[in-house]
Amino acid sequence: MADETSVDLRKLQIYSVFVRNHTQEGTLKALEKDLPRIKALGTDFIWLLPINPIGKVARKGKLGSPYAIQDYRKVDPALGTWDDLVHLADQIHQSGMKLMIDIVYNHTSRDSVLLKDHPEWFLHDETGKLYNKNPEWSDVAELDYSNHDLWSYQIETLKQYAKIVDGFRCDVAPQVPLPFWLEARKEVAKTNPDTVWLAESTGGDYIREIRSKGFWISSDGEIYRAFDMAYDYDIDQDWHDYLSGKSTLADYVNVLNRQDVAYPYNYIKMRDLENHDNLRAHQLIQNENDLLNWTAFSEFQKGAMLVYAGQEYGVKHTPSLFEDDKIHWNTNLDFSGLIKKMHELKQDRIQVAGKYELTSQQNDIVQVQFSQKKEVRIGIFSLKSQSGVAKVKLEDGLYTNLIDGSDVKVKHGVIQINQNPVIIENR
Image 1 (cartoon, rainbow, N blue to C red):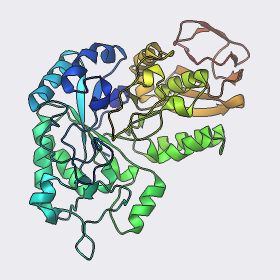
Image 2: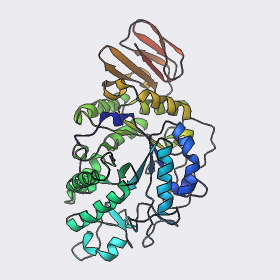
Image 3: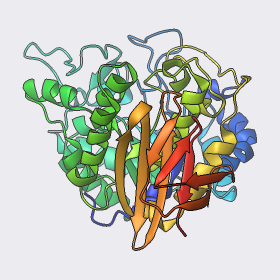
Image 4: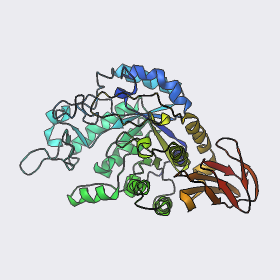
Protein backbone atom coordinates (compact mmCIF):
# COMPACT_ATOMS: atom_id res chain seq x y z
CA MET A 1 0.00 0.00 0.00
CA ALA A 2 1.07 3.61 -0.39
CA ASP A 3 3.12 4.02 2.78
CA GLU A 4 2.12 7.66 3.20
CA THR A 5 -1.64 6.96 3.16
CA SER A 6 -3.23 8.39 6.30
CA VAL A 7 -5.91 6.44 8.15
CA ASP A 8 -7.70 9.80 8.47
CA LEU A 9 -9.01 9.14 4.96
CA ARG A 10 -11.47 6.79 6.68
CA LYS A 11 -13.30 9.95 7.73
CA LEU A 12 -14.13 10.85 4.15
CA GLN A 13 -17.54 11.03 2.57
CA ILE A 14 -17.46 11.14 -1.22
CA TYR A 15 -20.47 12.35 -3.22
CA SER A 16 -20.63 11.02 -6.78
CA VAL A 17 -22.10 13.23 -9.53
CA PHE A 18 -22.92 12.34 -13.13
CA VAL A 19 -22.99 15.92 -14.42
CA ARG A 20 -25.16 15.21 -17.48
CA ASN A 21 -28.01 13.81 -15.38
CA HIS A 22 -27.63 15.76 -12.13
CA THR A 23 -29.46 18.92 -13.17
CA GLN A 24 -31.93 19.85 -15.89
CA GLU A 25 -29.19 21.82 -17.63
CA GLY A 26 -26.68 19.00 -17.24
CA THR A 27 -23.69 21.36 -17.03
CA LEU A 28 -20.78 22.12 -14.74
CA LYS A 29 -22.17 25.61 -14.13
CA ALA A 30 -25.59 24.28 -13.12
CA LEU A 31 -24.00 21.93 -10.59
CA GLU A 32 -22.71 24.93 -8.62
CA LYS A 33 -26.14 25.81 -7.27
CA ASP A 34 -26.39 22.38 -5.61
CA LEU A 35 -23.10 22.69 -3.74
CA PRO A 36 -24.61 24.00 -0.46
CA ARG A 37 -27.00 21.02 -0.24
CA ILE A 38 -24.25 18.55 -1.07
CA LYS A 39 -21.99 20.12 1.54
CA ALA A 40 -24.76 19.91 4.16
CA LEU A 41 -24.72 16.10 3.83
CA GLY A 42 -21.22 16.10 5.31
CA THR A 43 -19.52 15.73 1.93
CA ASP A 44 -15.73 16.01 1.85
CA PHE A 45 -15.10 15.18 -1.81
CA ILE A 46 -17.30 15.63 -4.86
CA TRP A 47 -16.38 13.02 -7.47
CA LEU A 48 -17.37 13.84 -11.04
CA LEU A 49 -17.88 11.00 -13.48
CA PRO A 50 -15.80 11.63 -16.64
CA ILE A 51 -16.18 15.15 -17.99
CA ASN A 52 -14.28 14.70 -21.26
CA PRO A 53 -15.66 14.64 -24.83
CA ILE A 54 -17.41 11.37 -25.71
CA GLY A 55 -16.56 9.43 -28.85
CA LYS A 56 -19.07 8.94 -31.66
CA VAL A 57 -17.71 5.81 -33.36
CA ALA A 58 -19.38 2.63 -31.98
CA ARG A 59 -21.24 4.84 -29.49
CA LYS A 60 -23.72 3.11 -27.22
CA GLY A 61 -27.06 4.91 -26.94
CA LYS A 62 -27.84 8.40 -28.18
CA LEU A 63 -25.33 10.30 -26.07
CA GLY A 64 -22.74 7.61 -25.38
CA SER A 65 -20.91 6.55 -22.26
CA PRO A 66 -18.72 9.14 -20.52
CA TYR A 67 -16.21 6.29 -20.17
CA ALA A 68 -15.66 6.26 -23.95
CA ILE A 69 -13.39 9.29 -23.94
CA GLN A 70 -12.37 11.02 -27.15
CA ASP A 71 -9.82 13.45 -25.69
CA TYR A 72 -8.38 13.24 -22.17
CA ARG A 73 -7.23 16.85 -22.19
CA LYS A 74 -10.51 18.59 -23.04
CA VAL A 75 -13.89 19.15 -21.38
CA ASP A 76 -17.03 17.87 -23.10
CA PRO A 77 -18.62 20.97 -24.72
CA ALA A 78 -22.04 19.66 -23.68
CA LEU A 79 -20.96 20.08 -20.05
CA GLY A 80 -19.10 23.36 -20.41
CA THR A 81 -15.58 24.67 -20.86
CA TRP A 82 -12.22 24.28 -19.17
CA ASP A 83 -12.87 27.62 -17.47
CA ASP A 84 -16.16 26.25 -16.16
CA LEU A 85 -14.27 23.32 -14.62
CA VAL A 86 -11.78 25.69 -12.97
CA HIS A 87 -14.62 27.86 -11.64
CA LEU A 88 -16.47 24.83 -10.28
CA ALA A 89 -13.30 23.66 -8.56
CA ASP A 90 -12.92 27.10 -6.99
CA GLN A 91 -16.52 27.06 -5.77
CA ILE A 92 -16.11 23.56 -4.32
CA HIS A 93 -12.98 24.65 -2.49
CA GLN A 94 -14.68 27.79 -1.18
CA SER A 95 -17.47 25.55 0.13
CA GLY A 96 -14.94 23.61 2.18
CA MET A 97 -15.00 20.53 -0.04
CA LYS A 98 -12.53 18.99 -2.47
CA LEU A 99 -12.86 17.81 -6.06
CA MET A 100 -12.10 14.36 -7.44
CA ILE A 101 -12.37 13.55 -11.14
CA ASP A 102 -12.69 10.27 -12.98
CA ILE A 103 -9.61 9.04 -14.83
CA VAL A 104 -10.23 6.38 -17.49
CA TYR A 105 -6.82 5.05 -18.47
CA ASN A 106 -7.65 1.50 -19.52
CA HIS A 107 -9.26 2.58 -22.78
CA THR A 108 -10.41 5.43 -25.01
CA SER A 109 -13.24 5.82 -27.50
CA ARG A 110 -12.77 4.25 -30.93
CA ASP A 111 -12.30 7.69 -32.49
CA SER A 112 -10.00 9.15 -29.85
CA VAL A 113 -7.18 11.60 -30.42
CA LEU A 114 -4.73 8.98 -29.16
CA LEU A 115 -6.00 6.24 -31.47
CA LYS A 116 -5.71 8.59 -34.45
CA ASP A 117 -2.23 9.88 -33.58
CA HIS A 118 -0.75 6.81 -31.87
CA PRO A 119 -2.42 3.57 -32.94
CA GLU A 120 0.68 1.73 -31.69
CA TRP A 121 -0.38 2.60 -28.13
CA PHE A 122 -3.40 0.27 -28.36
CA LEU A 123 -3.95 -3.47 -28.03
CA HIS A 124 -4.24 -5.40 -31.29
CA ASP A 125 -4.82 -9.05 -32.08
CA GLU A 126 -2.65 -11.20 -34.33
CA THR A 127 -4.42 -9.87 -37.44
CA GLY A 128 -3.83 -6.24 -36.46
CA LYS A 129 -7.39 -5.50 -35.38
CA LEU A 130 -8.12 -3.66 -32.15
CA TYR A 131 -8.43 -6.10 -29.27
CA ASN A 132 -10.42 -5.72 -26.04
CA LYS A 133 -9.78 -7.85 -22.97
CA ASN A 134 -13.44 -7.30 -22.16
CA PRO A 135 -15.44 -7.85 -25.39
CA GLU A 136 -18.58 -6.31 -23.87
CA TRP A 137 -16.91 -2.90 -24.03
CA SER A 138 -17.49 -2.60 -27.76
CA ASP A 139 -17.49 1.22 -27.73
CA VAL A 140 -13.88 1.55 -26.59
CA ALA A 141 -10.34 0.64 -27.63
CA GLU A 142 -7.99 -0.67 -24.93
CA LEU A 143 -4.57 0.84 -24.37
CA ASP A 144 -1.27 -1.05 -24.34
CA TYR A 145 1.02 0.11 -21.53
CA SER A 146 4.03 -1.79 -22.85
CA ASN A 147 4.75 1.45 -24.73
CA HIS A 148 6.42 3.89 -22.33
CA ASP A 149 5.70 6.90 -24.51
CA LEU A 150 2.07 6.35 -23.49
CA TRP A 151 3.13 6.59 -19.85
CA SER A 152 4.62 10.03 -20.40
CA TYR A 153 1.50 11.32 -22.13
CA GLN A 154 -0.86 9.98 -19.47
CA ILE A 155 1.21 11.29 -16.57
CA GLU A 156 1.50 14.73 -18.14
CA THR A 157 -2.30 14.79 -18.43
CA LEU A 158 -2.68 13.89 -14.76
CA LYS A 159 -0.31 16.70 -13.78
CA GLN A 160 -2.41 19.13 -15.81
CA TYR A 161 -5.49 18.23 -13.78
CA ALA A 162 -3.63 18.02 -10.47
CA LYS A 163 -3.18 21.79 -10.60
CA ILE A 164 -6.92 22.27 -10.01
CA VAL A 165 -8.33 19.05 -8.53
CA ASP A 166 -7.60 17.18 -5.31
CA GLY A 167 -8.02 13.54 -6.23
CA PHE A 168 -8.45 10.92 -8.92
CA ARG A 169 -10.94 8.07 -9.07
CA CYS A 170 -9.27 5.66 -11.49
CA ASP A 171 -11.59 3.55 -13.61
CA VAL A 172 -10.71 -0.13 -14.05
CA ALA A 173 -7.46 0.65 -12.23
CA PRO A 174 -6.35 -3.01 -11.82
CA GLN A 175 -6.16 -3.52 -15.61
CA VAL A 176 -3.59 -0.75 -15.96
CA PRO A 177 -0.20 -2.16 -14.87
CA LEU A 178 0.75 -1.32 -11.30
CA PRO A 179 4.21 0.01 -12.25
CA PHE A 180 2.48 2.75 -14.24
CA TRP A 181 0.37 3.82 -11.25
CA LEU A 182 3.42 3.86 -8.99
CA GLU A 183 5.23 6.13 -11.43
CA ALA A 184 2.15 8.31 -11.92
CA ARG A 185 1.69 8.78 -8.18
CA LYS A 186 5.34 9.79 -7.76
CA GLU A 187 5.21 12.30 -10.61
CA VAL A 188 1.82 13.82 -9.69
CA ALA A 189 3.09 14.38 -6.15
CA LYS A 190 5.53 16.93 -7.62
CA THR A 191 2.51 19.00 -8.65
CA ASN A 192 0.14 18.20 -5.78
CA PRO A 193 1.56 16.05 -2.97
CA ASP A 194 -1.85 15.85 -1.27
CA THR A 195 -3.61 14.14 -4.18
CA VAL A 196 -5.97 11.36 -3.05
CA TRP A 197 -6.01 8.22 -5.21
CA LEU A 198 -9.11 5.98 -5.37
CA ALA A 199 -8.98 2.73 -7.35
CA GLU A 200 -12.00 1.05 -8.84
CA SER A 201 -10.67 -2.35 -7.82
CA THR A 202 -12.44 -5.57 -8.70
CA GLY A 203 -13.48 -9.02 -7.52
CA GLY A 204 -11.88 -12.45 -7.76
CA ASP A 205 -13.87 -13.88 -10.67
CA TYR A 206 -12.99 -10.98 -12.95
CA ILE A 207 -9.33 -11.14 -11.90
CA ARG A 208 -9.19 -14.83 -12.84
CA GLU A 209 -10.82 -14.14 -16.21
CA ILE A 210 -8.39 -11.41 -17.25
CA ARG A 211 -5.32 -13.26 -15.95
CA SER A 212 -6.39 -16.36 -17.89
CA LYS A 213 -6.06 -14.27 -21.06
CA GLY A 214 -2.47 -13.45 -20.20
CA PHE A 215 -2.97 -9.83 -19.13
CA TRP A 216 -2.04 -7.85 -16.03
CA ILE A 217 -4.73 -7.24 -13.45
CA SER A 218 -4.06 -6.31 -9.84
CA SER A 219 -5.69 -7.74 -6.75
CA ASP A 220 -6.58 -5.35 -3.93
CA GLY A 221 -3.45 -6.39 -2.08
CA GLU A 222 -1.39 -5.16 -5.04
CA ILE A 223 -3.46 -2.07 -5.83
CA TYR A 224 -2.95 -0.69 -2.32
CA ARG A 225 0.75 -0.24 -3.11
CA ALA A 226 -0.13 2.72 -5.33
CA PHE A 227 -3.59 3.81 -4.18
CA ASP A 228 -4.97 5.28 -0.97
CA MET A 229 -8.44 3.78 -1.31
CA ALA A 230 -10.03 0.84 -3.10
CA TYR A 231 -13.56 -0.26 -3.89
CA ASP A 232 -15.39 -2.89 -1.87
CA TYR A 233 -15.77 -5.12 -4.93
CA ASP A 234 -13.65 -7.87 -3.39
CA ILE A 235 -16.72 -8.77 -1.29
CA ASP A 236 -19.44 -7.43 -3.59
CA GLN A 237 -20.65 -10.88 -4.57
CA ASP A 238 -20.81 -11.87 -0.90
CA TRP A 239 -23.03 -8.86 -0.25
CA HIS A 240 -25.38 -9.70 -3.11
CA ASP A 241 -25.49 -13.35 -2.03
CA TYR A 242 -26.62 -12.27 1.43
CA LEU A 243 -29.23 -9.85 0.09
CA SER A 244 -30.68 -12.54 -2.19
CA GLY A 245 -30.75 -15.20 0.54
CA LYS A 246 -28.03 -17.37 -0.98
CA SER A 247 -25.90 -16.99 2.16
CA THR A 248 -26.33 -16.01 5.79
CA LEU A 249 -25.48 -12.89 7.72
CA ALA A 250 -22.75 -14.89 9.47
CA ASP A 251 -21.17 -15.62 6.07
CA TYR A 252 -21.20 -11.95 5.14
CA VAL A 253 -19.82 -10.88 8.53
CA ASN A 254 -16.96 -13.34 8.15
CA VAL A 255 -15.73 -11.77 4.90
CA LEU A 256 -16.00 -8.29 6.36
CA ASN A 257 -13.91 -9.32 9.35
CA ARG A 258 -11.41 -11.01 7.06
CA GLN A 259 -10.84 -7.76 5.14
CA ASP A 260 -9.48 -6.17 8.29
CA VAL A 261 -6.59 -8.63 8.50
CA ALA A 262 -6.05 -9.26 4.78
CA TYR A 263 -4.81 -5.76 4.01
CA PRO A 264 -2.18 -3.42 5.51
CA TYR A 265 -2.91 -1.52 8.71
CA ASN A 266 -3.64 1.73 6.87
CA TYR A 267 -5.94 0.23 4.22
CA ILE A 268 -8.94 2.35 3.26
CA LYS A 269 -12.02 0.70 1.81
CA MET A 270 -14.61 2.88 0.10
CA ARG A 271 -17.93 1.56 1.36
CA ASP A 272 -21.01 2.02 -0.79
CA LEU A 273 -24.54 0.73 -1.26
CA GLU A 274 -24.79 1.90 -4.86
CA ASN A 275 -22.84 3.56 -7.66
CA HIS A 276 -23.27 4.42 -11.32
CA ASP A 277 -22.43 0.85 -12.44
CA ASN A 278 -24.97 -0.93 -10.24
CA LEU A 279 -28.62 -0.88 -9.30
CA ARG A 280 -29.80 1.71 -6.83
CA ALA A 281 -29.84 0.52 -3.23
CA HIS A 282 -33.58 1.16 -2.96
CA GLN A 283 -34.13 -1.06 -5.98
CA LEU A 284 -32.21 -3.86 -4.28
CA ILE A 285 -33.58 -3.15 -0.80
CA GLN A 286 -37.27 -2.41 -1.21
CA ASN A 287 -38.20 -2.25 2.47
CA GLU A 288 -37.64 1.33 3.62
CA ASN A 289 -36.73 0.37 7.18
CA ASP A 290 -34.18 -2.12 5.86
CA LEU A 291 -32.75 0.64 3.67
CA LEU A 292 -32.52 2.91 6.71
CA ASN A 293 -30.52 0.28 8.59
CA TRP A 294 -28.29 -0.53 5.62
CA THR A 295 -27.55 3.18 5.15
CA ALA A 296 -26.49 3.53 8.78
CA PHE A 297 -24.59 0.21 8.75
CA SER A 298 -22.61 1.04 5.62
CA GLU A 299 -21.64 4.44 7.03
CA PHE A 300 -20.59 2.84 10.33
CA GLN A 301 -18.20 0.34 8.78
CA LYS A 302 -14.47 0.98 8.79
CA GLY A 303 -13.53 3.07 5.79
CA ALA A 304 -14.56 6.01 3.64
CA MET A 305 -18.15 6.29 2.37
CA LEU A 306 -19.62 6.89 -1.08
CA VAL A 307 -23.01 8.50 -1.63
CA TYR A 308 -24.26 8.33 -5.22
CA ALA A 309 -26.34 11.40 -6.09
CA GLY A 310 -30.00 10.63 -5.37
CA GLN A 311 -29.23 7.92 -2.84
CA GLU A 312 -29.98 10.35 -0.02
CA TYR A 313 -33.60 10.46 -1.21
CA GLY A 314 -34.00 6.76 -1.84
CA VAL A 315 -34.18 7.19 -5.62
CA LYS A 316 -34.87 3.81 -7.22
CA HIS A 317 -34.10 4.48 -10.88
CA THR A 318 -30.46 4.08 -11.96
CA PRO A 319 -29.67 6.79 -14.53
CA SER A 320 -28.51 5.49 -17.90
CA LEU A 321 -24.88 6.02 -18.81
CA PHE A 322 -25.83 6.29 -22.47
CA GLU A 323 -28.86 8.60 -22.57
CA ASP A 324 -30.21 11.86 -21.23
CA ASP A 325 -31.78 10.45 -18.06
CA LYS A 326 -32.21 13.07 -15.33
CA ILE A 327 -32.44 12.19 -11.65
CA HIS A 328 -35.98 12.53 -10.28
CA TRP A 329 -35.29 14.09 -6.92
CA ASN A 330 -38.82 14.14 -5.51
CA THR A 331 -39.42 11.04 -3.39
CA ASN A 332 -41.07 10.31 -0.06
CA LEU A 333 -37.75 9.46 1.59
CA ASP A 334 -34.98 11.64 2.95
CA PHE A 335 -31.92 10.09 4.58
CA SER A 336 -29.97 13.36 4.48
CA GLY A 337 -30.06 13.84 8.25
CA LEU A 338 -28.96 10.27 8.91
CA ILE A 339 -26.09 10.52 6.41
CA LYS A 340 -24.92 13.76 7.99
CA LYS A 341 -25.08 12.31 11.52
CA MET A 342 -23.20 9.15 10.51
CA HIS A 343 -20.50 11.27 8.89
CA GLU A 344 -20.16 13.30 12.09
CA LEU A 345 -19.64 10.11 14.09
CA LYS A 346 -17.08 8.90 11.56
CA GLN A 347 -14.83 11.83 12.51
CA ASP A 348 -14.21 10.42 15.99
CA ARG A 349 -10.84 8.76 16.49
CA ILE A 350 -12.33 5.51 17.73
CA GLN A 351 -13.89 4.90 14.29
CA VAL A 352 -10.68 5.86 12.52
CA ALA A 353 -8.08 3.86 14.41
CA GLY A 354 -9.95 1.72 16.93
CA LYS A 355 -10.14 -2.07 16.90
CA TYR A 356 -12.93 -3.08 14.52
CA GLU A 357 -14.99 -6.25 14.77
CA LEU A 358 -18.37 -7.41 13.49
CA THR A 359 -20.63 -10.12 14.90
CA SER A 360 -23.89 -11.56 13.61
CA GLN A 361 -26.82 -11.83 15.98
CA GLN A 362 -30.10 -13.68 15.61
CA ASN A 363 -32.86 -12.30 13.34
CA ASP A 364 -30.37 -10.78 10.88
CA ILE A 365 -29.13 -8.23 13.37
CA VAL A 366 -25.50 -7.21 12.94
CA GLN A 367 -23.26 -5.61 15.53
CA VAL A 368 -20.21 -3.51 14.76
CA GLN A 369 -17.83 -2.68 17.60
CA PHE A 370 -15.01 -0.15 17.69
CA SER A 371 -12.79 -0.15 20.77
CA GLN A 372 -9.78 1.88 21.82
CA LYS A 373 -8.22 1.43 25.26
CA LYS A 374 -11.23 1.48 27.62
CA GLU A 375 -13.58 3.18 25.17
CA VAL A 376 -16.16 1.14 23.27
CA ARG A 377 -18.60 2.26 20.57
CA ILE A 378 -21.16 -0.25 19.31
CA GLY A 379 -23.54 -0.05 16.36
CA ILE A 380 -26.46 -2.48 16.03
CA PHE A 381 -28.47 -2.73 12.82
CA SER A 382 -31.52 -4.82 11.94
CA LEU A 383 -30.92 -5.60 8.26
CA LYS A 384 -34.19 -7.41 7.57
CA SER A 385 -36.65 -5.43 9.70
CA GLN A 386 -36.82 -7.84 12.59
CA SER A 387 -36.95 -7.09 16.27
CA GLY A 388 -34.76 -9.03 18.66
CA VAL A 389 -31.99 -8.76 21.19
CA ALA A 390 -28.29 -8.06 20.92
CA LYS A 391 -25.63 -9.05 23.40
CA VAL A 392 -23.14 -6.27 24.13
CA LYS A 393 -19.98 -6.03 26.19
CA LEU A 394 -21.12 -3.01 28.19
CA GLU A 395 -22.10 -2.51 31.80
CA ASP A 396 -25.80 -2.49 32.56
CA GLY A 397 -27.35 0.94 32.54
CA LEU A 398 -28.99 3.64 30.43
CA TYR A 399 -27.17 4.82 27.29
CA THR A 400 -27.89 7.41 24.61
CA ASN A 401 -28.45 6.40 21.02
CA LEU A 402 -25.95 8.60 19.21
CA ILE A 403 -28.11 8.60 16.08
CA ASP A 404 -31.31 10.13 17.45
CA GLY A 405 -30.67 10.87 21.14
CA SER A 406 -33.12 8.26 22.42
CA ASP A 407 -32.50 6.14 25.53
CA VAL A 408 -31.10 2.64 25.17
CA LYS A 409 -31.19 0.27 28.13
CA VAL A 410 -28.61 -2.43 28.68
CA LYS A 411 -29.81 -5.11 31.09
CA HIS A 412 -27.87 -8.29 31.80
CA GLY A 413 -25.63 -7.39 28.86
CA VAL A 414 -28.55 -7.37 26.42
CA ILE A 415 -30.28 -4.66 24.37
CA GLN A 416 -33.79 -4.91 23.00
CA ILE A 417 -33.78 -4.03 19.28
CA ASN A 418 -36.97 -2.68 17.69
CA GLN A 419 -35.79 -2.48 14.06
CA ASN A 420 -34.20 0.97 14.35
CA PRO A 421 -30.41 1.46 14.14
CA VAL A 422 -28.66 1.98 17.47
CA ILE A 423 -25.20 3.34 18.27
CA ILE A 424 -24.07 3.60 21.89
CA GLU A 425 -20.79 4.09 23.69
CA ASN A 426 -19.41 3.80 27.22
CA ARG A 427 -17.78 7.23 27.54
